Image (cartoon, rainbow, N blue to C red; front, side):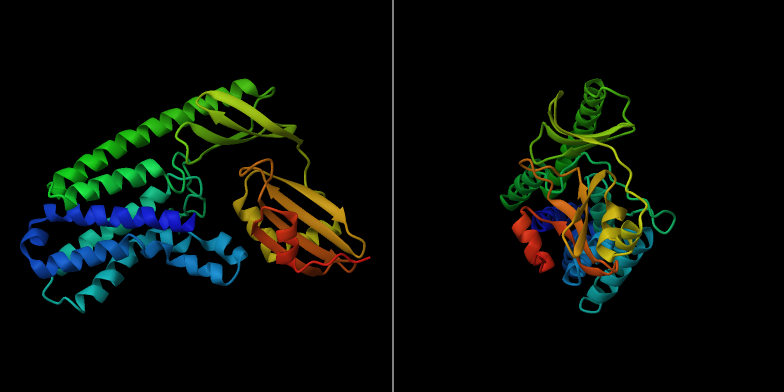
Length: 331
């Protein structure tokens, strides 16, 4: 999904390069035009530089991806850094116009990310709250496809300014429709649940009318799907608070477990005795796939309540999870 998300930001950068020709300075000045295209393309990708955190481990990535690099200070800082670096190579370019278009590219990147289910910490440093409106999938084929069509029209000679303005007008209507669909699904879920919901998460998929559902009432967690306003609940779990025991307190100190908890709003837990090891597993209920819940956090502790190994991330089979943990059952 990361590559697909990157692809969307790439076509957004190209589209914004076409729109930039509305600026007389860009249209009339070759050096400025070249610099602005470079600034827009880099700015469209810059906030996602934190993807390199995945090279460290999933815990660091989950805690910080779309965090500081998508914050208010970052949105102000990225364009300045990008503009200074590009101006070093194109000193005949107009710096102000280079900065303005680089800023717009960075701002649009962060703004668009707010609308998907992952969200961003775009309000930092004023708030660490994740802002995730959840109306657009991380990769939306309609948004990507419309950008590709607009770019092709530009390539075939259609005026890029009017083409891109039309594109953004259509996308504005599309986003409004998505909000309407999400609201309709949310209301439908309320009528399906037997009790008053405390929380409902309606998350998009790559299919236009299909949504993932995770909901919590006072007594249970519910997981399902919606197609249009038709809601189907697949799983129902009794809601149980994580027990306050020495084992759990020790597990919660683990970096993978704590990172998972910072990211997952609706989850269930399992504690399993494996002989000389004890497994604490947290399972995110938002991502049901073919009857399996692939986003988990697992910690193995010994009898002295020391962490032996742990993992958080996407796992689609127990065999793969055991390989990640380098886990061998102890008789």
